[in-house]
Amino acid sequence: MIKDWNIWTPENSKILCRSIGLFLLCLLWLTGQGSEVGIVLLLFLIIMALIRWRFPLPGWVILLDQVACMIVIPFWPYSIFALALALFEGSLVGKPWYALPAVVFLFYSGASIPLIATFLQAGFTGWIIRGWTKETSLYRHEADQQRRQRYELENLKSELLLANVQGIQMAELAERNRIAQELHDDVGHEITAAVLAFQAFEQLWRDKDPFAEEMFLQAQKRLTNSAKQLRETVYNMKPVQAIGIDRLKDISNRMDGYPLEFSVYGDTSSVPVYLWSILEPCLKEALTNVIRHAEATKIMINLDVSPYIVRLSVYNDGIRQKEPKVEYGVGLRNLRQRARAVGGNISIDASDGFRLICVLPLEKH
Image (tube, rainbow, N blue to C red; front, side, top):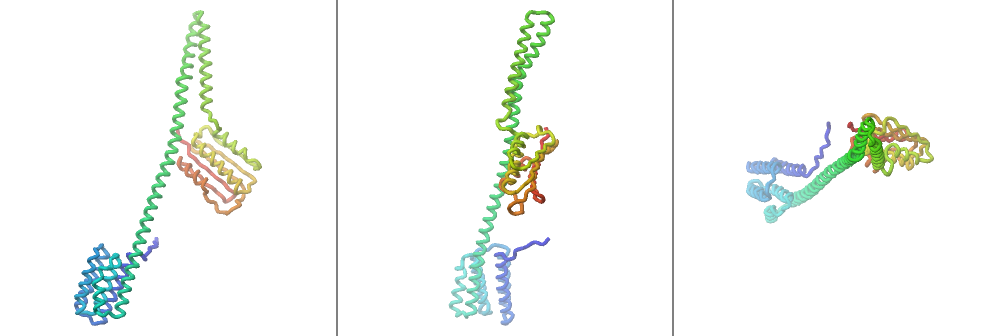
């Protein structure tokens, strides 16, 4: 696999500039009949360049480079050009005054134009690379901070989705416990008392006891009370607004002017409430897209409930009035996140008309 490496980095530029400077000094030594002392200076500068490449050195080390160059100048005059490297290193660390001895020496030695140009170019190049390094570090810091914030937001979003699902499940469990408690405390006690009253009535009836008729009326009254309480409990279970398959059919019936087919397969009573809260907005979003973006002549809605999944498919044969490329809008993205939070998924297909498919898993109780 080929990787796209970016070689133009501040660190690589520093290495390149040092290498060019040392290479030019070597050429001056070869063409200028340099002495053995020049070789020692070149080896010293090469070693210092390698150390700077591997380890961060303090700024005062630049003074050592200048001292070494000034010692060699009487034996090899071209070593004065090596002082430009000290100015380059001082500009890199943002402390050009460390190269002040080299500048003073250059001023009093009566430098030539090529030497002055070399010093100016070295100082300018070092300053440019220093600014480039600072901008690169700032960019990397901002990129790391944005990546960290995005990671934290993704974690927060996952936690909120999980909390939403857990809240729905806890609400469903609390409602089940409430219904079970009401059935046990009220209806269950009345039915149990009625059964005991009928058993007592049976014994009294056999013995032809005059209290048999009173016991029968008492048992009948208890059965009537239990039936009343059972109706009240069922009435309290029924939501104010219709949910489930009736709600989906009600939404579909509001699509006036569109020939619509609604097909249901399987047992819809096995679908829990929190899944209906996802299927309903999916149907609304699909039908809203038909009105806004498509010229449909036929709409087909299929709800298939199997023992393991519930699948809602909304198809229309219309042609999108806008761009042919189908993308997830804000509504579909939110619905897709809600579906994924419960282990499902939402997909769309625009190869032939437009189809929205929502697949949600059913829990095993």
